[in-house]
Image 1 (tube, helix red, strand yellow):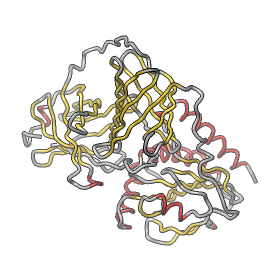
Image 2 (cartoon, rainbow, N blue to C red):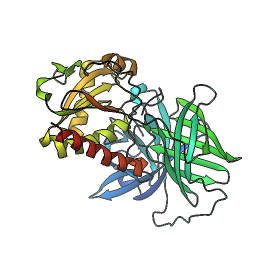
Image 3 (cartoon, rainbow, N blue to C red):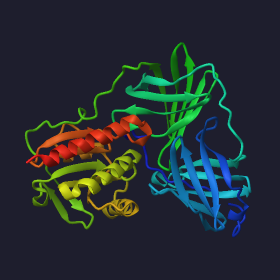
Image 4 (cartoon, one colour):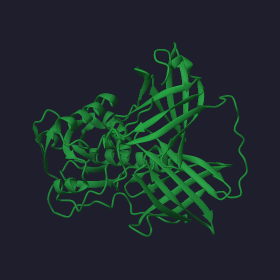
Length: 407
């Protein structure tokens, strides 16, 4: 998605008081964690701590999403936990066996970008009772962000059971992934923290409407409003970016070795090719990359090729390469990777002048055996969107099969 400047790739840090033996002081089980994003607003998330062979493993839960962080590493009196899908980590200190605290640090924005963090243990065997609420916000909501300044549309899709509410916001450039929270009285809160996103939504239900504030980390806050509207639709993701010049998709980029790579390319003649425009800092891109890897494994032998072009946050070429190589290694990706440059949609659009514009990371350009563009899909609605995701996976797979059968 990443349409606006508040969508950033993040690193986290947190800090542990008893050096040498700090891990052994933590209670295994479920923890309630919070990021203090301003003086009055806290972003809650669920943290699970488990112990295996005298080592602790940490897991974050966002609705149905599970992020296994693995075993923390001690550094001085601190513990460092790495996130698996992004170059990010948590450093923390243990104040006692049931409390840890420190900071979430966004190294991409500088080491001084800190958000206070704390987590407290709670009884893993306790049962949460689903309390009845006055309002049930289940449904499909026509949503407007920043209505008074620079409005843009989305669809809120929520499911509520008792006080618990889960869902996401669909936009023309992707989804807000796995959100969860609670409804109490007229107030709703939804959050997601995954090592890249730190999203928090507050909302008040009044006169058949939701009005609230959206926070992204500590650096962005904006308004949103929504009304129930089951029939509201956004532009179809295959219609946002399109061909404006009667010429083939053509570009010249550097590969990860620093060598020139041109397209069209003889090695891709008579092949079905997906060109993915992405960034390793982008969670929606990572969702799409996982899906493309599945497509590649299934159809590569039949003639499917994938070229992934990375647009990264560092200025330096070698640092951009590093980010992409880390992604390759982490997910065992075998298709072709190129370096597009810095993450800048104006730059990306300039590199593809045959298209009207590139408004989103990711964007997938599907090219048939004849070299013509068959489909351009803007953004990516991942597993957090449920049926929307599975429907897209099935339709795209069928579309690729059809293209591979053409002569």
